[in-house]
Image 1 (cartoon, rainbow, N blue to C red):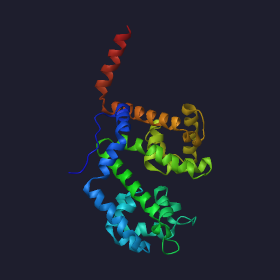
Image 2: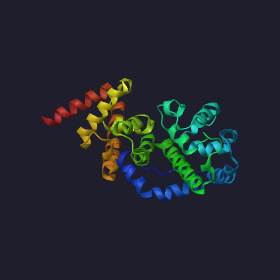
Image 3: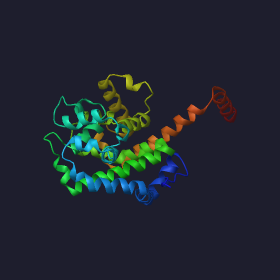
Image 4: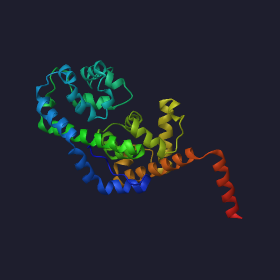
Length: 268
């Protein structure tokens, strides 16, 4: 039987429980037989890969390589992923740079086959990092099967840190957030944007993200989230706002009217 994360509560209380037990739960998750088999196979076989075609020809290698970047749903999109890998990260008009979802760019940067063979695949440290990321992402998926909001909260520290560590301009960093679906959802929820926000022009979205971030967190700059305490505040606000949205969506108009009447009676 595979390990299932223990999430006795939702929302902020559930998040605090998960943080207290995270290391133990992730270790148990990584020891599950199917994940041990997947990562041992990857470690043994990846050194034989000399091209993007070699990597993509082996479904078991694709499982770990794509899973490490949260792209497990593309495991059968072989032609598309080959184009991502072979275009590479450096061409401005290459596919990874044109896609709004920047996880593909991260994949292309890690497995760089633009010169043929990827030198990273001979680096044991690189292989360790891919396996570690695969375990982390697969644990997040397992969490998401029980609580999707908790899964999104888990990406905040890792993905925001990766974006900020890249040293891009503030605007470019915000656009990377906007191109990361889970992180984008976190910010949209925490900053109180509605479902139609994504239909705005990208430059307008950037302006609104900055304005709301300044109003709530004190600065227009994404770099403020380099501070662990500010990231913690973002996470807590996301979970609280998400709970509010879920509660409102479950109310019928009659229940909402009854609640308003009850509140009015209490104030009398």
